[in-house]
Amino acid sequence: MSDTGGTNYEDFMMSDDGEMGYAEMEADSDEELGVYEEEASDENMYESSSAVQQPTEKCRSEELYYLGKVLKDNNDFTKAIERFEQVVNMGEMLWGFKALKQTVKCWHFMGVYMSRSTSVEILQDFKKMVEYGFRWMRELGVPYVQKSMLAIIKLTVPINNRDFVFDETLTIQLKTVEFHLDILDVLHDVLQGVPAKFLDLSTMVKQLRLENHIWKERLTTNSISSESYKLFNDMPTTSDMLLFQLQCYIFQFLKTGDVPVEEFQELVRQIKHRLNSSLALSQQPRVMTIVNFSQCIKNMHLERYKLLRQQFWDCFQNLEELGNKNHVFSDLTLCGFILVDIILWKPSNAANGVENNVDPFELEQIKVIANTPIVHNLQTLYQNFKSLTLPALARSLSSLDRFSMTLESLFSKVCQLARERKLWDEIAPLYTCISLQDIQEHLKIGHQDVTRDQLLTILVQCIMNDTAKVFFKIDFTKDYVYFGDEHKAPLKSTHRECLLTQGLNSFGPCYKNSVKELLKMTQKRPANISIFGFQQPWRDKNPSRSRFHDEPLSELAEWMDDIGIFVERPARLKNHNSAVFIDELSEKRNNSRVGFRPSDNKSAYPLVSYQEMVSFVLETITD
Image (cartoon, rainbow, N blue to C red; front, side, top):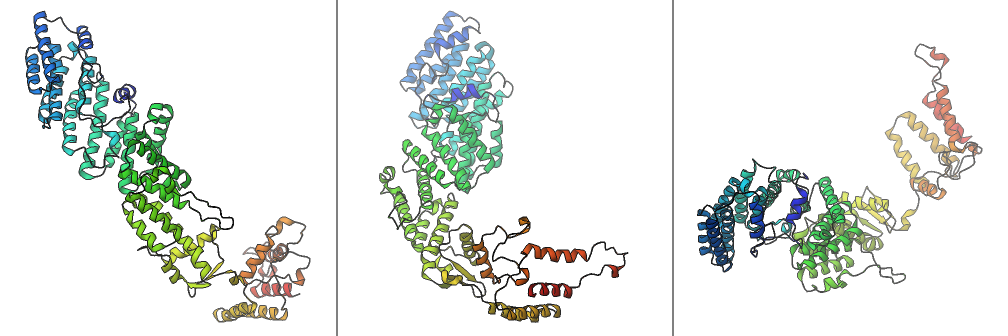
């Protein structure tokens, strides 16, 4: 965004209480809504830049002008307009311009008080006022003309950007937005030739045109185009525009469940910087609601659940300050808060009777609205998750389906945790053997089936995260899962011999002979042996060469038992470790190829055949 005109314009657009919404009616006064207006100041500004008027003409114009104002204050708008038109026709420059402004106001208030459609009359007289002001801007003075038009624009085209997310009933109608765009187009066309002289007015018109253009898109297509987002780059970086852009991203998130992450986070960073430097801005509940919900979107993406719970709660309290307890946005933030609380919920410690959780429904702000449907549905969901009744949990989630797209990641996380708790708290302790298909059926939540791959993913992730409460093994040949410590028994040597024997028919004669030799060796030496030296780490002159020197003994022994490797060292390696043995093999191989080149005499450097290598290995471990 551009910083042009940011400071002055932002000061003008921010009201005393910081609220910027649609105003159907503004009290008229000689101060013209507090913007550099009316008699005393007008005359001073005008007299400094215009010619002296004839006394009789000026007095008559002034008299008719004030008579029209009295009629306007008494809500007799028709007669007031007649008096103001007489002033304009008298040709007195200053009072004619002032009368045109009052005429526009009369049409505006007539539409408010009498519920009449006066948009055509407002647009017609607004054009006259703009043409008149720019025609005589040198005589009237550029500052005076600009400040007068700023006041009229604020009255006829009020700012509505802070209600963009909160406007559920769409109180802003399409015809109103189109009327605003027509008024702004009048000024936009005139300002093209004199942008530098009317900088504040140009900035205001640019912002309001973008704002109403986006409102028109929302009302017609229920979305915001990418081209509209690009227009923010040419806007001043005022707090109002940053907040409006942030609301557009939130609106997109509520509709699609997605936002451009980098642009969104950068925008949040800029607004947080503004909040840190502006106490008035940080004390506005509406602003803080927008910012806190933006933080929720970011932390949902990053899965920072503890921080996310606090931000949802802050957002809910901000909405409570605004009096929006029945607001859909309020229901959304409350739903997010309870879902995150469920994700962070932990079972009570039965050993010492310690309760690890605080019931969120005991919070005073929630107890006040305990009888509302949203609280009832969330409380049912909370209890069904704790009791692990997955069919009832599915029904509770379906009752909150309107939030499922926006809070999709939280819904998915709740289902994932419910399945994991069901698996390890109810299924694993109950069954010693169960098929994968039966587990899939137990973990089904509503119409959400658990596929075989998803179930295996859950099992593997629980091992990796160290959350598997029961030891288990999987038989992939039959798709069985075995739960319990009794399945920790290691494989037997007979199983190994059977597997080796079955493999003889699958390989060549060289492999068959080698396997037969190894089988004879194991039958000859029934005691367990190990060619890798895992059983005991022993000292070596060069400890760095021992590949497994620092491995924990218990883990190695368990690993070898599970995969069926013998665990006793052979006598041949009494004074050697596994690294020394591997080095001997490497040396044999390397010596056979030292200095060998295709042109050399091959008989001088004979290669070691596979059979010779096998014989060397057998001789080494059986010696």
